[in-house]
Image (cartoon, rainbow, N blue to C red; front, side, top):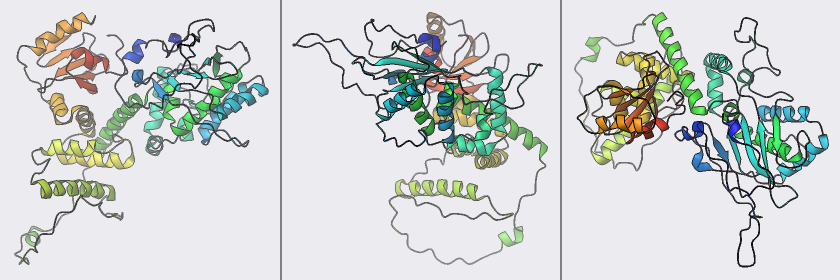
Length: 495
């Protein structure tokens, strides 16, 4: 659907300053992590003035205001000096270049396209599922509009990829560090689906093979690819060098959606592991030793407070000893709280319950329990609070959505007074949405996959669940407008 919204214009058509209006998928993807590059105008762009009218040259295809989960815009790369070495720096970037060069029909066009990329003739690049778009400067004043298509993965292939990734925590940690492990990239050639309709035993292949890249350009050259399309393909390899999540977006899914799916899979795996693991005895000391009378020396005079809390020391790991990652986590948090108490006289988290404080600690760590260290932290915090790792993962998502208010919305239904809650349903109907079912402060879509919850702070919080399952997860950004909270979701199919 996204790829069909971008059609190549005729050279005789009037130029446009940016790409076509956003499709529904793009409009629904305004909330999330954005990676918007530098937007520049072409030096050759001129406008009508006192000396006579000159045709307007398209400045850029970039529209960063429309970027979101399923659309990312990257600024133009500066010129580079090419000495015949490999164009890309990473193995996956070079694999992309290999797919381009092995599928090309004319090596001379590739050479000219690489020269265009080296000179910085490719403008800002927009990436959406299955599509890469940019303006490329050639020999004419007006730049050419270029797009490269790549097949997106279907749901079965994504399930296979997520299952493989969930079994390899080290690979997930590498992916978060902008590295693409070869075990996640899949085989070098497509793997046909089994006759039974199941997944291929070789896994999901992310990188394209020869002939899979489909270039299109508004220039009159019918080469495959032309030099302008080749230049865009070479620059795309540099994008993949910097962020392999660009490849995952090209295959159909955004970074936040993938990390959320992996977080849910890891929470389920941790819950199953916790049920199978027997409880172990906790270390301790004898009560007589802990309660024996002791004479303590007088306290020294207090020192002046430092300007900021210091970093904790590095704790070595020892067999049977405390987890050094957990010690570092607790020491860093305790130092920040102590510094705030010393300088302001108030502990910022003193009024939190044990469960709220555990959620706060877990939400402060990146990765959502995907790496081995964060999984161990989630398991320890869940055990200390009498909850499961799945409960903690869901609470962390609510905390990141709206802090302590977001956690209250997740766990505390309440009956709102007449007013904002009663006006929400007509607003949803006016936006061509079906009648949501009310329950306490909840409004649920009749299909049972989208829900709105009104918080005591007056904001609407969006939730999603698989249809037919009562498994609600916080999504998007809270909004005063119920329709605005829904449009912040990464996907609102069926609304």
